[in-house]
Image (cartoon, rainbow, N blue to C red; front, side, top):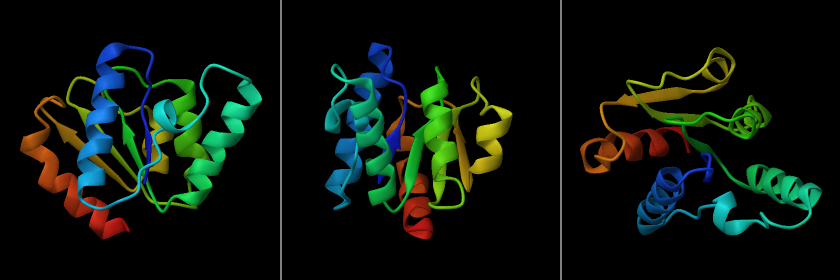
Length: 130
């Protein structure tokens, strides 16, 4: 599973890592760009590593809250018609038009920080699309 979510702010960095830990605890292999690809060196190499991560995964889980960046949108668009994509976002941050059209499922929650409240729905959808 490839997790896409910005890591330009501390909340997203921490949430992405927490989400990866939870999914890995269920036995799934996770590619998390902030952790699993070079982010400080050659930009082309970072791009190639991230695209390879998408190519090698079976699905995308996109964190859509707070900051939906061009990188986030590209990763969803690149996966479109190749891999299932699930977005989790909150009520205050709807998914933009183009990414919305490219995803299989959008899970809208009241508060992303309350992951225990929607975790089972996320897991069921991951199982459904894998």
